[in-house]
Length: 496
Image 1: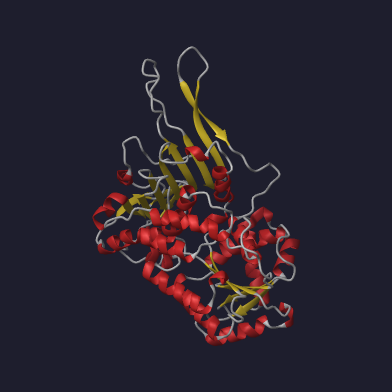
Image 2 (image 1 turned 30 degrees about the horizontal axis):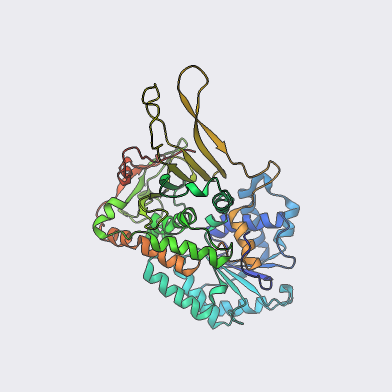
């Protein structure tokens, strides 16, 4: 955790809206369990699982056990689970029913909640339901006293710049900015946070981190899974809204930002906004040259046949929602002018792999023209975010022997010792919510400028409703996305 704002009183209740949904089950509960395992959860913190199913606490506990056993496997410990599950109570309610919030308010006032005055409301729900929950929290008085409780909002924040602005105005009508935690779990990853140290604590690196030495930057978030049961949301969102506008844009800002005056919440976010404001606008006539979209068709993932996107349950027939997007951006400032940033993300790709790859320019003088080594590959710095977290450089050395041949070696920056276990990104951010540290959360002007960057692409694609490229599941997408590259010697880097 980066030291940021001074924390206020630690919350004693944590309400999870959408407690039986995909997000809470797959991401939130394993992370909370990890915090329990690490002894990081405050004593007396109580969770309220808010959902619509006709369950009692026993049925809820059975659901929680099954989901954690399935996810954690060998890590699941019965004694630890009993300790963890004792923090939970189940509350049946409807997001659109004001009476449910009145009942929730009474629940939070019961003695087992410890006379709690500071509550976290976690929105593990569809973005289309954010406004409803915010209004009902206000009408039921659950946002009082103002300035005390905290709300955690998942991405995407809006579906375009207009809706994001309207949602932000609504939230600010009932909550202060200091109460709003816009979460992007990529910012909780160790490698992402270590990027700041890698850049700004090493005089070896920072002088080279500019247009004079770097040829281009690639940011890839590849998934081998499909959309699962998320068709209702995903078919309206697509890869650009779901991933690129938030996750990948946040990674871009951390790669490109200037050193902040201090590692404090607003100082860090000020520098990220400067990057977003410096991204060159994409004219409508140039969208085709800056962005490419496609949709997965049937294919094989790790030897198993999988259906195409249009055959997934809940997807509209003849849908042209993109499951793959690649885009090129330029940052028009002193550090990055002329350096292309290539971003891509997709589902049903060959492997699950997320990384930031920085390619350096070729040496200005070719000393090996009169030798068998007529050209050499460029140097790279590669930061792997998942499935492993690592950082390494690629440099050339001479191979042993009489000839002038080189080979590439990797200098690995291993920052985790053997006995140190990583803390899940969600767990890191939840702990920050509890401690009142907003450093790794997103301020609204970041959201606004991210939408401004991608808005021309969205508007253009909304007019092109007749056709979308397809790629076979289990591939790396279509070669046609390579048309975004500025030179023939640039290509996608798929492996570490």
